[in-house]
Image 1: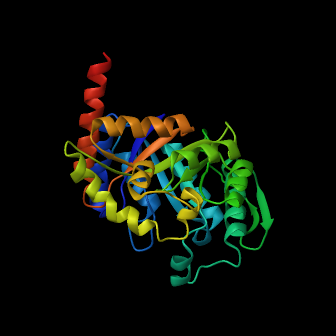
Image 2: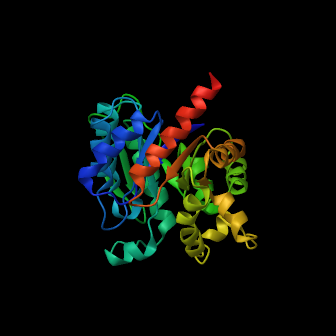
Image 3: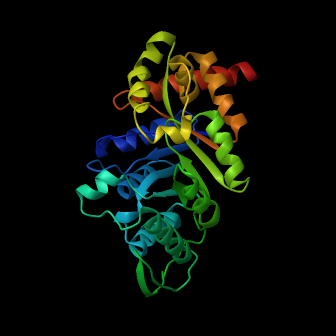
Amino acid sequence: MDLGVKVDGLPAEQVSDFARSTEQAGLDEFWVVEDLGLAGGIAQAATALATTTSIRVGLGISPAAVRNAAYFAMEVATLARIHPGRFLPGLGHGMPEWLEQVGAHPVSLMAALEEVTTSVGRLLLGEEVSFNGRHVHLDRVVLKHPPHEVPGLHLGVRGPKGMELAKRAAAGVILAEGSTPEYVRGVREAVGPGQRLTVFVWTSVGPDTDKARDVLRPVVRKALSDDFMRFQLGDEPGEFEQVLDRVTVSGGPEAFAAQVEAFRDAGADALIFAPQPGNDAEQIAAIDDILATARKTSV
């Protein structure tokens, strides 16, 4: 299982340093976000790729409803040609309230995601695409410089319709924070072994176990009141401390190892640590320390 870090809401000028720190820590992946009002996803990914040498960089996720399929395919193809095998593009239907804020809420979120995913995928393969759907309209569009190594699209979805779409039209699934190992196992069974399963997980680790877990307690409590968590936790999540154990990587080295192993056993291909904004540098260093100690112990 690959390990990585997701940074959430960094000022753009800090992306390079955090990408390099992630690579120097021996991690496999560095993920950026494209939430409304924050830095642009493609620009962040391009910066991270340009300032590192081997680490993979993921965009998790770009909202399909605000992305023109042809122009998004051009951006993905550009990064894939410059950095072959290192860019992991992610798409989702987008947060409804953000889409409403910018006047981009489609008639159907799932239709928009499916049409963009399908069209972008075909364009990246070098096909000429004509399509007249509910959201995407293309007339004989073709990329003159498609990527030599086509990056698979990864869909950030939660419910069964999204999983079915990912299985049919994408290369992988991105699961948001709040996923339990049990939920990951269920998704793996639903999409099959061929899909790359990337899991974002709230993370706070350090030598003081209680202090580390305290950072995430209010985050998880707040999330429990959100409707979307029902997909990951079910209707009866259980005692709060048990929930905290299941949806986070938190505490000291022993807890870190056990929680990471639980996600590995559940079928995750990549586990992406998501520190709280402002704790990014501290957490990358703490994860580096834990992994370095584990490597020495295994030698």
